[in-house]
Length: 235
Image: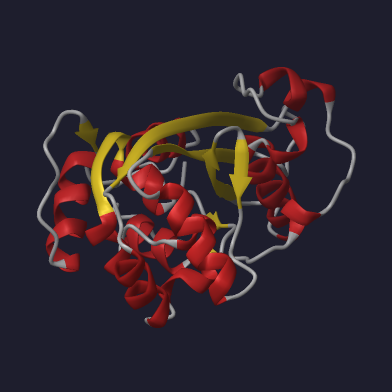
């Protein structure tokens, strides 16, 4: 077998960084398919990991929508899709509408623990008579935010970083200074859980990948970040 062509169904710079450091050679097909409501095969619905919130917000389903759209455009490739949401008190915190909304979100997160869910999907073998390879997973990480003063929130919002981030913070950027602890996968909070991505891509025939642990350490070095205690934080 030749080298498997890999496509990342995402325009996220964070996912690009992590997948590149994982050692994958890949192309990109960005998609807004997560905003669509196309019919979902029963086999995919049955394979979705358990999730307590409405199915329309299921990150693994949203990841599948992205991957399936890219698979239509690149049927000869293995497709990786991912989607991340931030949940506090059973409410999904999307990207803030404006700076005032960002301040409200950060005030809600202050001193509390919330959950970041990243769904991941890999689709392959769309060009032959076999059933396509479809793998789905969902990773939940608990993120504890430090107690934030009004000035800390104001200063962070003034940087502009919160405005394109779900939950109004980016752990990979300045927002990492607001995070006290992560219980679970750190890279899932960033947007691509390396352990699951490595396992699923390997199962789809992608070769030459680095270990998730080494990739995580390399990424931290590139970001100039010190690792959080491991465990409870994992790659």
